[in-house]
Amino acid sequence: MRADTKHALKQFGLGFLNFTIAIGLLIALQVLAHGHLPNRILNLLAVAIMLAAYLGGTRLIERVHLTEFDNTGGFREFAGGLVLGFCLFSATMLLLWAFSVYHPNGWGSASRLGAGIIAALSAGIIEEIMFRGFLFRLIAGLAGTWWALAITSALFGAAHAFNPGATIVSSIAIAVEAGVLLGAAYALTRRLWFPIGLHAAWNFTEGNVYGMSVSGTGAAKGFFTGTLHGPNILTGGQFGPEASLIAVLVCLSAASLILWRVVSRNRVQPPIWTRIPPPTNS
Image 1 (cartoon, rainbow, N blue to C red):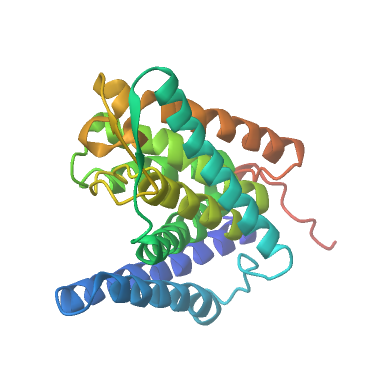
Image 2 (cartoon, helix red, strand yellow; image 1 turned 180 degrees about the horizontal axis):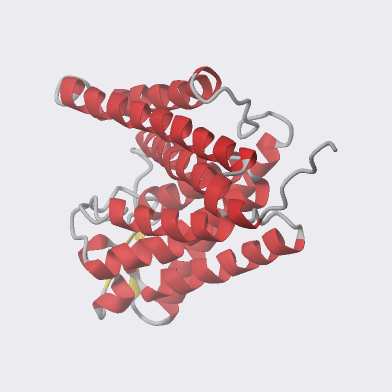
């Protein structure tokens, strides 16, 4: 076995150990604190644990210095993700309205704005560190970008299979629309600012702007009120618009453009078995 292959396998093992510790800490937090602390406090604690495990664990366990949270250009990438997430979900709702599936009823409420921001950012940070910062990075280091994109997208869809109202169709939709889109966002920058902003803005726009159910968790109080009527393939059923064919097509279109940029900028990592070994000194 080549030395670079051994090194890649070792780094994958250390990274997966770090990932396992982070997940274990999150589970322990839920078991010990659930029902004793408000949800927003639980969310903030979970974010702190995940950030500590990622930033600290990569140095202490993996012995690598990552650039995923470097400040240079971070605000621009995060802001770009926020704008894109808002625009993509708004485009989804506009198309549902055009097809007479979404029926707006008027103004809603901004009373849950603070809680919505915390929930959206918490989900964005925790899930992007888990699926892109850990899993995508580690799999790409061995099997390359395309395998990392396929595997993490499937895992992302499976992780939402236990949400209220989830079905096989909703899990496939999440894998295709969100898994591929967010994986592409990470592959383009190889940093977490862009996918975190995109993830958080999508969730916030869905729940706190349009008052729709976010991944089956129930309708939130949004700036607008409205209802969805029509076949489940368009409304998403109980899971919400994320399981709609419209959302899948909108996000897959955006993901295709981002992946085109990934390829054109030569940011596709090849599998370890196709990489040219470094020259040896003769």
